[in-house]
Image (cartoon, rainbow, N blue to C red):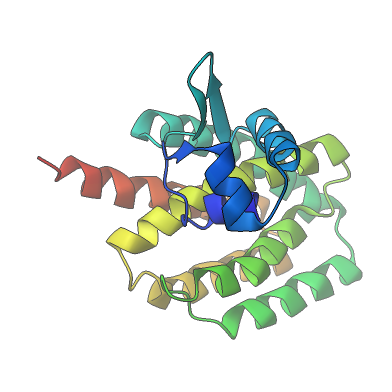
Length: 205
């Protein structure tokens, strides 16, 4: 539940995480909360400072830039390998996941409802790459990006109108076995979150 609240933005970046407060919020023992916080530190979602306790990991353009660049490297290669190795079952999985995705037009109010099919679609695109290390890295980086997608929708709540078309284009590139076109579309898709947040934060005084 704590991880969920961090990823969806209910607990904001740099928010102080007090064990007593979290124990009350989640009806959990203090030892359980501390164990959860320690696990989230290892996942990069929580930070711990000596004698200062825990905080939600901060969000910054530098962090998002590094995250986006790394995702583009990992997912470009995984997508290209999937296009080369994927069979008809892989194609059917992508079509099915896209159909479920297309039933939900995302906005800030239904962000979590959207994230379930969204994650499944992106995983399906890469799932035939044949490299479990790439897939595990892609999944972990996807989760780190979820906080920033929630921030993006705060700044651009109508973005959902374009997202279905973006994902349809990714599906069509995969089905057409176009690794270069699909990889370029995927990288542009990943970069959009960074561009929206960069523009919005650049307007702050």
